[in-house]
Length: 210
Length: 210
DNA sequence: ATATTAAAATGGTCTGACCACTAACCGAAT
DNA sequence: ATTCGGTTAGTGGTCAGACCATTTTAATAT
Image 1 (cartoon, helix red, strand yellow):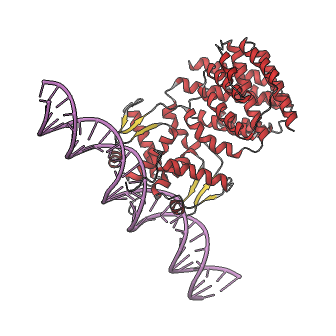
Image 2 (tube, chains in turn green, cyan, orange, purple):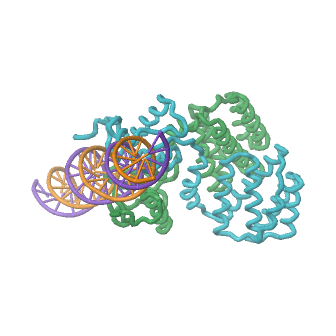
């Protein structure tokens, strides 16, 4: 028993993860702030550097940190794009999982539209978004904007997260004209109608999938 | 340039990840199937064992694989809600206001009630829950049950985490009689009325707080 | 002061050594 | 032949140390 001052069966890299999390909370680190170097963490957390790296690589894949060679490790706003391709292999097979994911995304967007409707917000200028090549990107950009209007940062985060995961899934091709109509309704502030159309698009996508 | 047969700037562990993915696809591995050992992968993929481990630890954290000491590494069904917990620790840390948190919780519960209403589900026997001492516990237990009825694990998990986090920073004082009424409506399957009451309770709590 | 160069710090990777756990194997006792 | 118990090989878990590649910083020369 040379190592294993560890008591709990938890693996070192997982404990490291917890400690890093606490470190972030205690020091109130925010996006872009730098974490201690791997060697420093190794000493401070009393773990081998390889274990530190296992932890860091894991949350790097998740998109929670960013690593810059020669500089250091930095906190960053969550972006799902790294794990996306990877997850596709695994998510794709499970049909229920896929539908759960799509449903949650839909429901969150529905909430967003409803809140916009209640608050009678002004959406501002969104004409730029239609320059996006892919419909998928347009959708993401559009809702990113809409969510930002309802002023609930957490809700936006959750949706963004879910939407990121959704990208791993083969999106059923959206009817372009239908989507254009949706877009117009948003632009005109007809959130109620937009919500209905949104729902019907979602419903029809369910049928196409199954 | 001793190592670095790598050309692309991609890190080794990321390439390993891709290769593993392909391996899984090519061999059509399914849940519970065993992956080659770390040492085997190290040879076959032409990478150091530490790099292999970085890759494996990362997808282990995601819940894609399961590792059993002394046995090996096994494929496992991926469910998004596995990683939700992990991500939540980083997402929830950025919550800016209590109000935003409470709103998300409310909105998720609203979704739940609406879905129950649409699906005209049977809630089953919930009389036991009123034995709970605290109203807070009752609320949690009740919605845990309701969410389980709508059969979306991901949604349940998200709500559960948000609700759990809410409890740590907020002790809601609910009007007992009002809540009892809410409870009765649920019991009778009047989800629409319940949703309205739910909303009004939320609204009034906002006033009390501010 | 500015430009150049050297040194230090940091992430990236590999190797090799142990430890701890598991399962399979094999011989001895029944 | 069956069962029990120990050995052994295979596997994950962890660490230490060595290099490499990149970036930043400090020292030095101009």
